[in-house]
Amino acid sequence: MQVNNVFVFEHPLLQHKMHLLRDKNTPTKDFRELVDEIAMLMTYEVTKDLPLKDIEIETPLAKTTAKTLARKVTLVPILRAGLGMIPGIQRLIPNSRVGFLGMYRDHETHQPVQYYCKMPDDITESTVIVLDPMFATAGSAIMAIEYLKSIGCKDLLFGCIVASRYAVDRIYREHPDVKVFCAALDEELDEDCYIVPGLGDAGDRIYGTK
Ligand code: PRP
Ligand code: URA
Image (cartoon, rainbow, N blue to C red; front, side, top):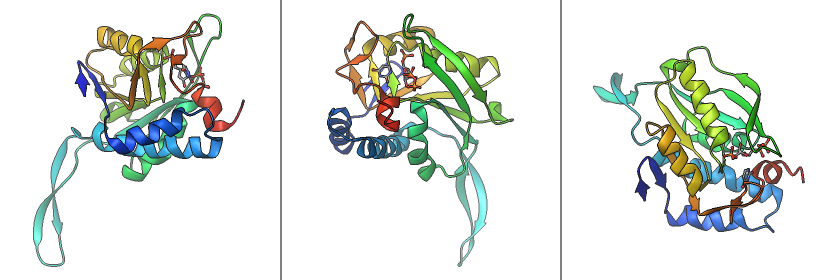
């Protein structure tokens, strides 16, 4: 299903994995593996418009023209939780580079605070996929997108697992050029700006910190 710049996955395998991910009884090991598998399955759709270029190759029988990706791909996980999506995506795009953005949400204001940044040198030449499983107020993703645009990135996608209605409306207003991909779209945010029903704190559930 696509609404404005947001694509919501409806594939049965993904939806099946989502019920396991949301279940509060799913243990850390299974939760981490599910994030990995869901990110890998989403990659097929997230990358469907990547540009291709011709390349001359030789098969065992003949010379021929084949297709190869025209641009590099850079994955930018928002730490911590975004990191859990990286191995699954790297299995499908093994030559992708990774840039890191560390951010946490202030508990009082719910505003993102950046604490780390390390990007590949030629990131502006690549398609950049920003990754974070949770898209709640959109504050963290929008801070990441604004930073990446400020250093010259033009080709930006955002992949998350659970998005709130509030976040998708906000990113469409503020960055309609950025395509957003999610496995679930939830209607509510609670008073702590957690997504409801959501899946809880993704970072804590991936790394077993609570
Ligand atoms: C979570 C999540 C996102 C952010 C989403 O991170 O992983 O980065 O909150 O919320 P937003 O859309 O309202 O900005 P958190 O601050 O819990 O940090 P962590 O990943 O280190 O646990
Ligand atoms: N961060 C999370 O990990 N979960 C939410 O529901 C919102 C922000």
